[in-house]
Length: 283
Image 1: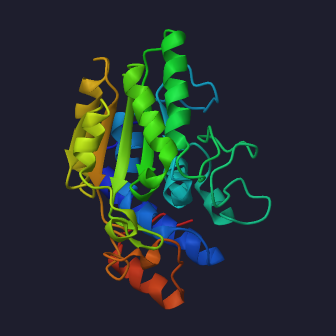
Image 2: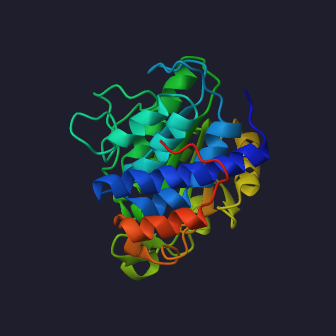
């Protein structure tokens, strides 16, 4: 059943609560980027992407999503659970021995929704392009979505894939860059600046859209829907999505410090007060 915008906005808060609960429980994981990308995941699975349940690995005639920056697995797992790919209660196994919810997504555990192992940065676009080309060969008109970190674009393989996509006219892919300006060692501009990313992507032959309000759910839905109208025109489509690392928790926002650090008990309590829900469905 389709959810209203208000229901989806409430769900973003619930997903953020899930993210923090998961990383706190094992004192491990990546909350910053996960919190920043919550609107993207909610928009994708709640309004934009065409997919079917129960999940199948082949996913013929349905849209596919590939997470390249796999360290933000908490937001991915929570989204999949909240959209009924697997039971919400399984989130409590995050990063534990024999869990299907490892720190970076993997495939051999058979977790519904996961089609590739990811987290080795730079590889996800190549995989997504291969799937997109496979769909074309199969006469499958559905789309492929991928998500990448801005720091990930410092990897050379990404730029090879960007060239390949334009050269081969892979026009059934929508690749989004989570542009939060932060990475594990500091601000992206200080570590290795991406320069004018919009101009660079256009120079590499992509149709480029940009959204400054990446933590506004309705704006994210709108830019993804607009991107869909640009597919099928002979060029791959990129979205530069400006987000805030740690969004929703004031002491996490604006700093790279929470890229890969879990909150303690007191910090978790403070965060939950900021992420208030009248009737949360915490696992």
